[in-house]
Image 1 (cartoon, rainbow, N blue to C red):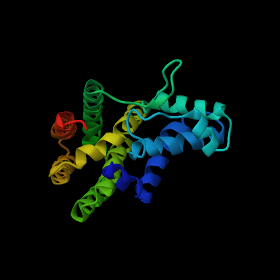
Image 2: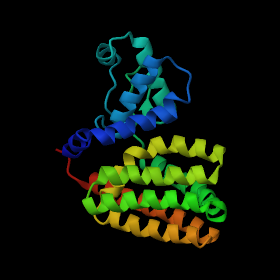
Image 3: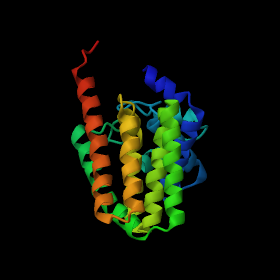
Image 4: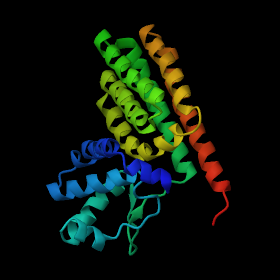
Length: 248
């Protein structure tokens, strides 16, 4: 697909995807460095669309690529399976996970509910320095929107929400959201690529920042939930349009 090729050719975006997988997968599990390296590389390829949903993950080919036996490959793929990026069915070749629409809805609604808690805490207790960090991330989103750079916008958006979880200082919720983040990272590009979505997202986040500055916890929680529901709606529209396309 042309879109996948464009994403794969963005080295900075791929670097960010690899760093994200390393932070959430490699650092969480005690595995040899080679296993972590394989998981990070393959995970980034999945997030960046280099490997499409349903693609086979041939352990023989991967073992040749990484100059290793098949055991580290299997361990790396099992790590990615735990995070929802890979399916490893019994007696069948592993493949890139194919989340169905119901899975996607559940993930986005779960994120929406958890971020309601986060947003309320940020509005109540974030320091001015913390709010300034959010403003900085939002400024990066605006700059990416002006440049028409969807990849940069996606990663600025990831940073914005990660900063929210850090400011709320809720480690339990952060661990859950980090895991869900990997399951949505490859979907965000599809959602934010839809016409008008980056502009709408900027408007939504400007309102959220204003609620934080006003220390309005109730409004901030409602807005951040709305942001996630809007993103889900855009994704549902895109997936419906793809399903309607004739198959060649």
